[in-house]
Length: 380
Image (tube, rainbow, N blue to C red; front, side):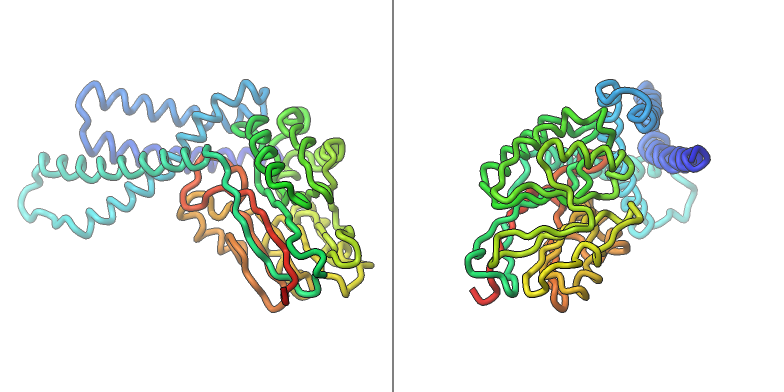
C-alpha cells in the first residue's frame, strides 16, 4: 500500500508539476513579463503548486477543519490550472496553424507580441471558464423532473415520486451547510421515496459524521434508501453503513424491498463493484417476477446485466455528467451512459449528473441536480 501511494504521489508531482511549468513557460517566460511581475508570477505559481500537493496530503493527515482552507485554495487552483492548460494548448495549436513563420531573421519583438496576444487570450478564457465553473458548482442545486413510464406498474402507483441524489461527496469542501440545503430542497418536494445512489462521502465517519447528520431530517413516506458508491470503500464502508442506519437511512446491500403494496414495485440495490461483492442476482432473488423492479446501482455499467435480468428502471450516478467539459467524452470510455434517461431492450436507466462535485468545486457543462422521478404505468 505504501509503495502504491508513493508511486501515485510521484506521478502526481510529475504531471501537476509539468502543468505548472507549461503555464509558466507560456504566460511568464514567452510573454517576457517585465520585472517585478515576472518574478511575482513565478513565485505565485510555485506557491500554488505547493498548496495543491500539500492539500492532497493534509486531508488525510490532519483534521478536516485544518485541511479545508488548503483544500479550497488547492482545488480551485487545480481546476483553474486544468482550464488554463486546455486554453493554452488550443492557443498553441491555433498559433501553429495561423501564424506563418517569418523567413527572415527572428524578430524578438514580434515573437513576444504574438506570445502575449495568444497567452493573454488563453488566460482570459481559462480563468473565465474556471470562474463560471465555481459559480455553477456553488449555486443552489436545481431540481430536474423526469417522467418515466414503467411496464406492469399498477394504476394506483401512477405519479409515484422518487427523489434521487447522488455523488454528494461530503468532504474537504462540502459540509453540513450543503447537506442542510439539499435536505430542505428534497423535503419541499414531499417525495414518496428518497434514493441516494452512492458516493455520499469522502472521508471517515469520525471526520464527517456531523456534516452528514442532517440526512436524519429527510422526510419520505416510504423511506430513504442508499447504495454504496466506490468512494464509500475509500472511506470505511462498514462504518458508514452503520452510521447511515442511525440516521434512518436504509442501506440496500444486494437485496430488495417491496414498495407500495400489490400495485407497487420492488426496489433493489447492489453494492458498488469496488466492494468485490456486488451481486445483482442475489439482489433480485426471491422476488415476484410479475412486479416491476427499480434498481439502485451506483455505476451505470450495471445496466447490461440489469436489462438481461428484467429490471425495469435503474437509477445511477458516478459519472457527474462529466462535471467539467471535456471530461464527459472520457467518461464514455468507462461507462455506457454519461447522464440522462436512456432505454435499452427492456430496461431504462437514469444517470444523475450528481448533486455535489468531486475535487475542484467547479461544474462546466454538467450542472448539479436533485432528480424528481415520477413513475407512471406505460399505458397511462
